[in-house]
Length: 345
Image (cartoon, rainbow, N blue to C red; front, side, top):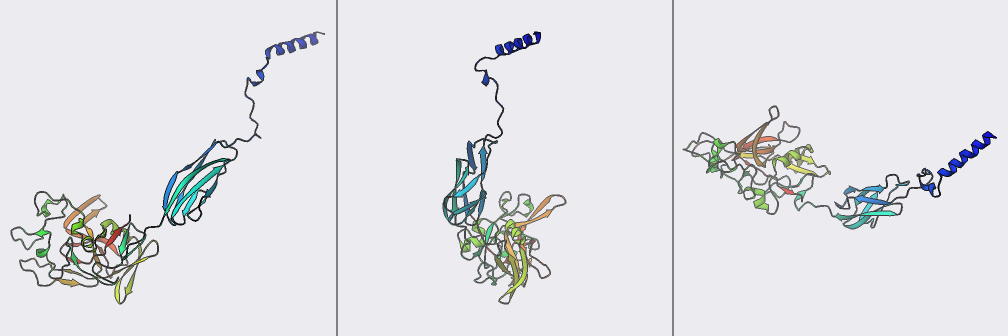
């Protein structure tokens, strides 16, 4: 009897603690079998430009993070312009297309513009580098032709003496003909002892357009190669070759295109006197080409660069080398061929 009494009392107490509406007082446990719907999707970047044959990767972000099915499907409004697979867009033809990403019933898009790839100008080849390279030397009409010979920084071919006394940017002081002359343009700031112009050295390290023979002769954006562009060229695979009986080198571009550079001679006259020899000396089969930069020496051991303003950097080929190199230099009054370049933009 007592047991029954206590049981009834306990039930009464429990009944008094529960009020109508208390069913929602505490959160119910999540039912793992219930789906979490996708509430949004974004695509990054929201727009992109690429060339025909180029690719760009798009990234889709689905919310919430715990959505049951975060599968993203991709589609293109025009597969003839751009295709998409897993977010990787490939340019097919010039035009515009919209790439759409869909997750659940939510979508986001990216506007794609495809342009024709840049083409090398007439007379140039694309080697997959930062610039186009002319197929012929300046003044030549065929790839194997030597073309004209220029003293560095002069815009008229030098065909006679190639001496310091005739060089445009040099001057002797007090008729010191048995020494290297002073330069009057293109002199490093740290070389006042080489400067023959007014005031301080001008600090010019690379040819200005008015002194660049390629720019003056060919016009437009044509110019002589910079030291960095020569260094880039020398990283390509290369091999000795002949074209129409002329020895030279073939440089094989990253895209498989080939540039031929003949082993042209160079000309100089080192007579240090008031009356130089009547004609230059020609050194055959060397294959040396002017860059647009003055000479510099680099010491990796002490992190030091020394500039020699009376000289300019060259690209060189020699019979005992197994590849071209870019580390040489010549006095600026030497006459060398020029292989022009055209910037990519």
